[in-house]
Image (cartoon, rainbow, N blue to C red; front, side, top):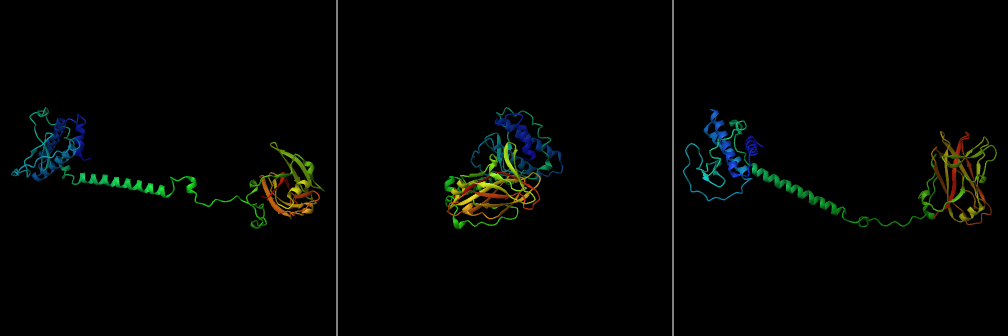
Length: 358
């Protein structure tokens, strides 16, 4: 906002700008202040003074247009130009001001109750003759194009957003957005399972994981330590950790493994099927260990030798075997060596269980 408009709008705050007569008083004060400033500067030529009056008149016209709708006026007959001023005689219009080629200039209405009041001093500090080089050309046109640009930008953003939402399936249900082919339930087939030897220190992975297998059959539970045998100089001791029991097994110098019984009834349920064994274990606190697992399952054969690395965090160590369809004839055993390096390290066993693979 330039100094002229700021001075006029500041003057509006001292009265009711909706009242036409009050606005006319403010406009007259603005013109009077400009004339006073022009007269005080001897370096201002007549041409410069005319341009500055035209600038003020244009600003008054712009401000007044905010309060009154444009009123078409009959075109006046051509009249001789006024000598010295270079503008046509003003034509009286509605609102107490006159329109000329220079814009709006104040006039005196005989019925105006403000006509005898002196011009306000509100503009003395605001209007200086050197601050107005000419009217602000194209301001209203610039504002109009700015509004058009903003409107087009907002509309474009809305259209792009709607296109993205529709194309991205935002308004479709989850089932409509899911274009994938429904997956059948996972099954373990003979030809799609290819067991691989575990990496050093890492248990083997079973397709689907232990959590996907149901119907676990208990092979060993610490609550029944009678199914455990510690031959030679090996040891097995039932212990408790925050209310949960486990058995701690420690190998001796002879490296004799600790034996866990597998009941004949369990083996009969596994005959002719693929079975997944799960050993829940951890190393003794403060030291990891490597342990091995061997099986003797009677007439069903063995499971081969497995080797694992156990840390101090409880883990599930899994292995899978396929058993022949025959009568086991007797029970079997699972033999665990808690420390294959024969360093006297312990292994805590929380459970041993088995489940037929589906």
